[in-house]
Image (cartoon, rainbow, N blue to C red; front, side, top):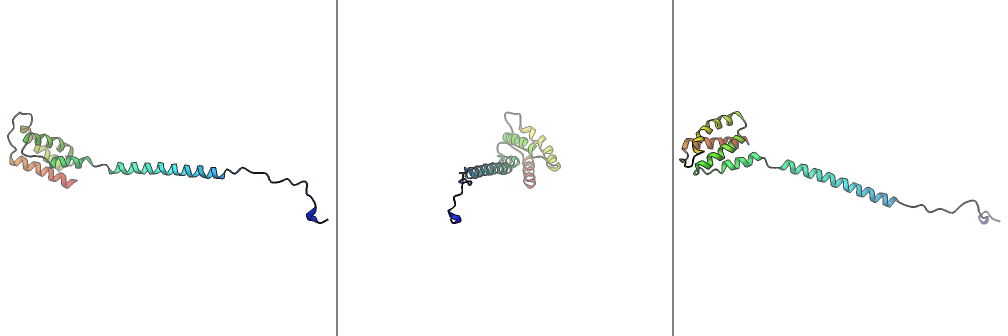
Length: 133
């Protein structure tokens, strides 16, 4: 008898092993995509938050669009947004000189038109705000 004809009785046949590597790989890919989506959403919100418009620019646009023919309305607008924009010493000083001039145009039913000196102060303040922003 040759060695290849001898039956081997003590070696068992191969057992099937369940292969779950595809499921593990799929779970890892799904977790990675979820993590990437969360990071992308966080970065998107951070980018949008940084992009928000500066409110001072909107206030300056309001001041820049003042209609000097309506003295009462322009006095109120200048007082409101001027106080918000007066951040440094020079602008606070100009505004402190301008506010008493605007008092005669507020709190009355009928007001006279704006005088030229008050208009110049208002325009000077607006130009100073433009330069600062």
